[in-house]
Length: 88
Image 1 (cartoon, one colour):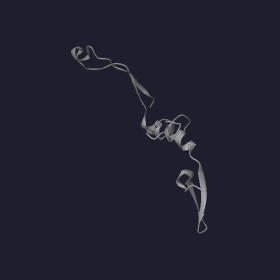
Image 2 (cartoon, rainbow, N blue to C red):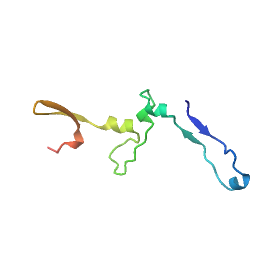
Image 3 (cartoon, helix red, strand yellow):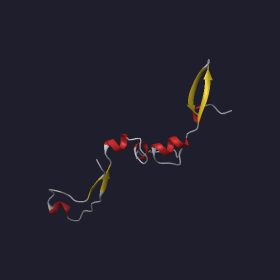
């Protein structure tokens, strides 16, 4: 399913439309959100970052900014984001 842009209002009386502004909206299909293809999936999902921790506004961009570190606990390696480790 391709993106769909709504450009008209159907079955709405003209009296309700008068003096109102309608903006065309684009909706993304579920298959595009689930996709791993370039410019799909995490590239389409926005992030609300009220603390300004990231310079990107998509899930893909924020994940790319994370630095991952391997730590070893009792001979078992764990991959953790660097921000979760104590300083020093």
